[in-house]
Length: 526
Image (cartoon, rainbow, N blue to C red; front, side):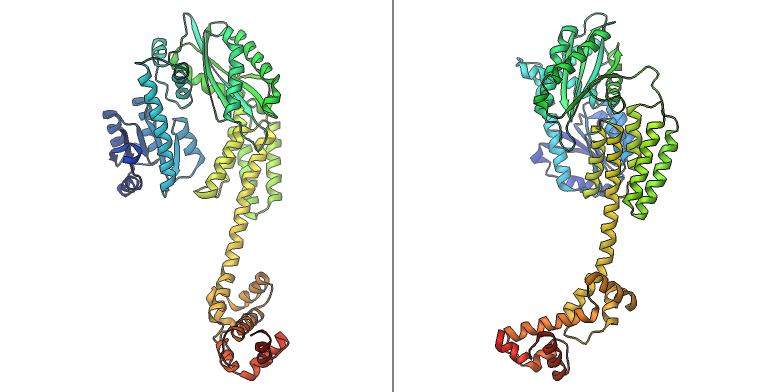
């Protein structure tokens, strides 16, 4: 049974989450609830907790602090953030601690169910792999077990601190006088497309062919357009490893017909002489592959020991936020394009700088100017923006992603304004449709729409294409014709039914609008 703990300072939220899910059908049980981070940490350290569901802000020990402590105390515990704070910075920090899911309040039953089902699959796979340690190995099982090293490094869950522990936990060999180096092979697909898993698998295999002769051991896994891996080699063999990486890129390039318009780059991490520095090596490799934004794709990329820092980064960010915010408030895509181009020019002229820093600056710019992101389409667009930033192969692609994301904010504001304008007119039409049989006036309808008569009159004509009196007349005439065709009511009765008190006047208006008297219309169409 999978053990779950729920932490939120509002007990009703804990109760709601507990009630939303059929835990038994998922093979799970709620092992406890906590009103603050310290209580949750106490439960996790005393019990074998598989999943922690926690809010971000709680008294005593907030959610992010709790996640960091749980990661140290129980590296195998999976975590889900549920919070009302829809902000990139929270999501980014949570993801850095290996949080698998970031859900927003109010909690959506299906989203929570999907997240739990996903984690159940991962937990079951981890348990199956552990069971394999005591049984016979198949080749694919053994490889799957070893790739947990890459998964744990990526998700900040690697707990081995000695080479012996690394060998015992992941069956990863190093040998005497060894170092380990992480790498990231990035597959940048054609814009608008995604890197397919089968192609990632192929690139990993091609790279492995080149690395095996220089590696004491090698393990890799593909996910999200990137093949991440770890190589162990002797001290002083980094140059040979770099050459092998270049050979791998050449081998992949020779099979470009398989990969279409995709581009490839490799980021090489720092040397880890103890397992505890392997995560730092992986983070460095992830940052290094971002250098393709500046230096281009098709290269083996490394960070220098004295990595440059962009001059005036905060000033560039502040200027863009000011200009973009003004453009968004004015709902001007033209001004937004100017702000984005100025942002691009500022980045390109602000030397020195790194690809990782430029990407992070762009993400911060999007976050700061974000208006619609909580739930629904807005949240999806925010996720899509971050994904585009990760896929960008140049600074131009980054700023285009930023412009596209913020342009969507303007589109949403325009749609909202149109909705605000259309709503009173929609209410007015509904009022007329429901009350046309009564002696209604402009004052009556404008009051129903919540507008002054003069403003309502102008707005109604602008939005509807005709004035209030003409619209009311058309509604009444349509109703009269329908009654003449489909009922046996007298003309006098129909006259009163559609809002007129004078039969002679009604007959005159009807003939003027339809070309025949009511009685003739009935003979022709009744």
